[in-house]
Length: 153
Image 1 (cartoon, one colour):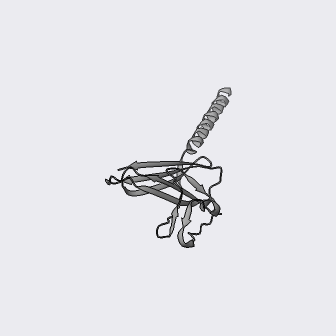
Image 2 (cartoon, rainbow, N blue to C red):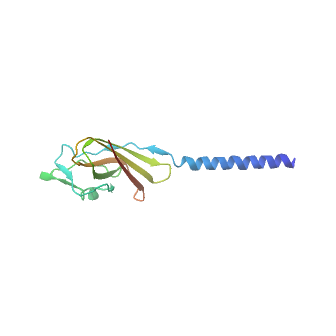
Image 3 (tube, helix red, strand yellow):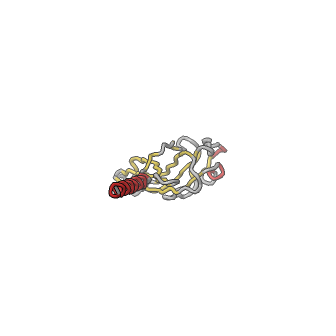
């Protein structure tokens, strides 16, 4: 009888250990978060600061005004900062740019994100600047966002 009870206790402990180890592994899973690209193309606005591979997190119109300038008093796109956060970064490619792609991922852990940017280069020998800005669902101020920029041919 004691052997059976001991067997059940050991089985429960082993299953509990497996459950918690699986739960911990699941917290490292990355989930792709949908976003909308925010472009100044076709407007009379431009980004002001030199932001070379520095991530700027913008959660208000006042913060946005530090990084954007529009000529002829033209107003830029309206952003609902109660629902969205604008992420902005710029860089310089080693060569000409063929295309850019990016993904925004959330780690299974609370308040941890990664913004992955791939800069695909062409054979032009002149380095080119680039800027990307995306609108994502509202992000709390205490959030960690890792910027991962890769350049490849």
